[in-house]
Image (tube, rainbow, N blue to C red; front, side):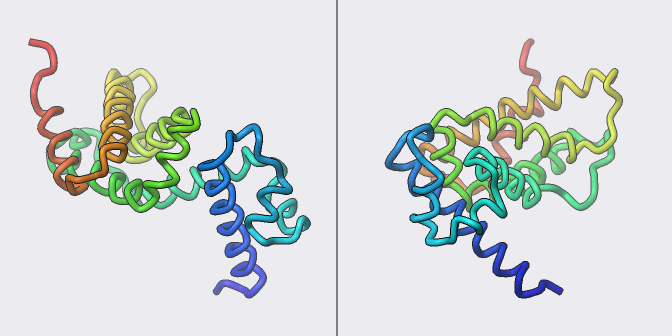
Length: 182
């Protein structure tokens, strides 16, 4: 059950996030003030500060929400982690969620916040993999895949996302199923 106050607070947070991204399309991040965001979001100053201490917290909130959206409820067995269908399904799920937030993701990237996108993708693949020993060489493969998939994601979104998420996920799985170095 979501109480009225909670629903109203979520609505206010969403307005604040939307306001910041609208402002980022016109101004550099450093030029945007809390007052700009408050006015654009049409919320009370107290509402803004009840939810966020600084504007960076707004970006972190957006990325955390996106990560929660793409996270899987169940983890993939490490032995099956890089099985073709698991790769397709994992990429496709992430791509669908990033596509829904395309405008925001591209704004972050264009304004120099690409590391936030990469960090979100890293956390996604870590959660997707489940428990994995830090001594496992597959840990590095996860970050290799995460980096490549983030670049593919950003290029795909930047070029208009003409292919479906399933098509891009299949392309990624096909690339991963072939030896990279012969």
